[in-house]
Image 1: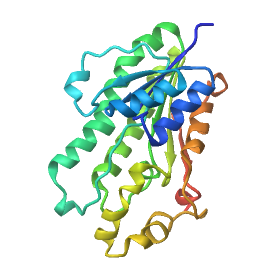
Image 2 (image 1 turned 120 degrees about the vertical axis):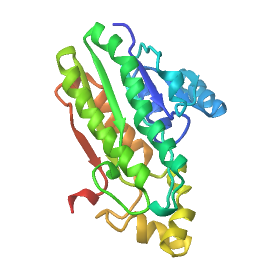
Image 3 (image 1 turned 135 degrees about the horizontal axis):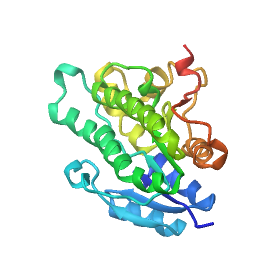
Length: 245
């Protein structure tokens, strides 16, 4: 059988890097998409994959894109922590372009190939914030809620063509994206940085630890597999019990 191709956005670090490494371990050909050339080329080189250097926030450049990937993992993201009344409008637009409009355009670009071969997987790295809200994260929460809807529509439209679409919804994962939030979280909540992980990030979780990127990648690995052919339109919470409350 021809080796299947996995495209992972934001694959140069964090969750994306872990998914890319797991995909290569599982025998896929992996395309590592990231705007950071050095990071994309490092990961691709280490796993025998291919680097695609791209700024996915430049959505106009994606409108005529066509992708021949068998698995699309929408993972790229950024974060801004601010009260709504202090939030810069461009920060809101940036997060929606990168984390909602870009996934739509990539799904749009990938589906014709998936439909033609009668098999495909769309995996959207969402968040517990795709299921719940937190203060000071209006652009991120609203983009992730939108991604949940996009994923479900993709699942319904793709079902007749052998294409599944699902969301993975982790809580706080030990990644550079999360680490960069600590100073902003301390400022907006008025607490020392040393207290952010315990009092803000893990306060709602029953299991009091960060999630490791490899744990998210393990779930993505299942969703990429033939064994997950009947799993579609779902949102898999991996949040230590956060959304159980």
